[in-house]
Image (cartoon, rainbow, N blue to C red; front, side, top):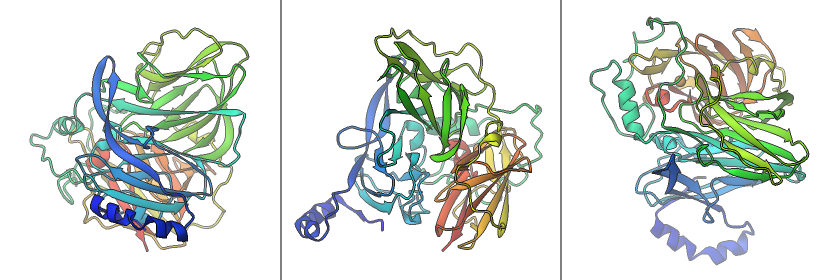
Amino acid sequence: MLTRRSFLAAVLAAGSVPDAAAQNPLPPPAVLRLARRTIEVNGKAAEVFGIGQPDGVLGLYAETGGRFRVRLENHLDLPSLIHWHGLTPPWQQDGVPDISAPAVPAGGTADYDFTLPFGGTYWMHSHYGFQEQLLMAAPLIVRDPGGNRDEQEVVIMLHDFSFAPPEEIFARLRKISASAVPMGPMGMPGMMADGPGDSAGHGMAVPTGSEKPHLNDVQYDAFLANSRTLADPEVIKVEPGGRVLLRIINGSSMSAYHIDLGQLEGELNAVDGHAVVPFKGHRFPAASAQRLDIKLTLPPGDGAYPILAVLEGERKQTGIILVAGGAHVARVSQLAETPSPPLTLDLESRLRATEPLKPRPVDRTHTLNLTGDMQTYRWSINNVAWTQEVPPFPVKGGERVELIFVNHTMMPHPMHLHGHVFQVTAIGGKRFDGAMRDTVLVPPKMSVNVAFDAANPGWWALHCHLAYHQAAGMFATIRYL
Ligand SMILES: [Cu+2]
C-alpha cells in the first residue's frame, strides 16, 4: 500500500527501524529523489528536473521476479507524482494525480512496493502538470536475472527540449485560434480543458483546409539523447566485435523519431518491454512513450557508430555514439541528410508477439474516437474532453476487452493504457496477432485495435501520450474493482 509521510513522521518512523529490521530481513527500499538539475543545451545552461538515486544514477534498475520497493523523495518546492510507465502495479501506486493517489507534496515522500512479474525496458515520468516536458523522466529497466552477460547494455533516453516554459508552449498552441486561453491549476491533465461537452462541435468533421497529416505542433529548441545534443553527445565505449543491447526510450513529450542505426544492422527484440519475433533492420520507428530493444553485433576492429533518432517529417536529429577501440569520433550534424518520413504502422503490422494473449472471445468492445483539431487545439475522446466527472469506460474483472482507436484527426496519437499490457490485434480493421505493448501509435485517419485481459482491478488512465493533447483533454479512464 502507498503510504505518505511528512519528513517529521519519517524521522519518527526511523526510530523504530531496528525493531522492523529484526522482523523483516528485506533490504531498505531504493530511494528516488525528485530534484532540479542543470544541463547544457547547445551551449546554454538549462534548469530541468531529474529522478535520481542518491548516488546520482538516473532512474532505476531492477530484476524480473523481484520487488519494486521504492521510497520517492520529493526534494522540490512543487508537488509531483511519478508514473511507472509500462509496469502493472496495484492501481493506487500507478502515479496519476487524483486518480491513483494524491500528488506528493513539496518535501514529502511516498512508498511503493509491488512485484515485477516481467522484465523489459520501461520508464518513469511525472504525471503532474507538464513536468515530464522538463525532463522529469528516467529509465526503469527490469533485467532478467542471469541475462546475457556477453552483451553490453546501452540505455538511450530521448527528449524534446524547449527553453520556453511548457505552460507558455501550451498557451501558444491554444491561442492559435482561441482568443482567450483559460489557464487552470496544474495538477491533472484536463484541468485546463474548459469543461464537459465543451469540445462538442469541434470534433471529427472540422475541415482543416488541408488533408496533410500534421506532425509537429511544437518547434523545439533541441532534441536530447541522455540529456545531451549531438553538439556534445554521449560517447559510449564498446568492444570491437562485441554485442550491444540498445534499450531506447522515447521520453519525448511530443515527438516521434526514426531510430537510425546507420551502417549497422539491428535486431528488434522487444517493443515496450515485451518480446517480439526478432525483426532485422537499419531504421525503426519510435512514437512518444514507446521503447525499443535492439540487439547489435559490432564489426571487428575499431569503429565509431552513431545511433541516431531523426525527428519524423524533419531533418533534426539527436543521438549517442558507440566507439569501439581507438576509433576517431567525428562530429555528427544535428541535421540528417534527408528528412525522416512520417511514422507509419508498416513495422507494427509485421511485428508478432512471442507470447501473445491466449486465444479467447472478446467479452467487451469499446470504440474510442480520437477527436479534436489543430485550429482550436481541443483534443478529446468520443468528443468528450477529460474532466474528473467524465465516467470511466466500464469493464468487468476477468473480461477480454478490445479497444478500437479510431483517429478522426490529422495528427498522430500514441495511445497509452495504464496498468495493463495489450496486444495489437488489428490495423485498419485487418486482424493479426501483433505485438504486446502499452503504447500504440494511431496515425491520422487510421484505426487500431488492441486487446487486453482485465486482470488488474482499479481505476486506470487511458490517454494520448502527447503531453499537450493529454492536457487539452484527450484522456479517459477505465475502471473495475
Ligand atoms: Cu494526441
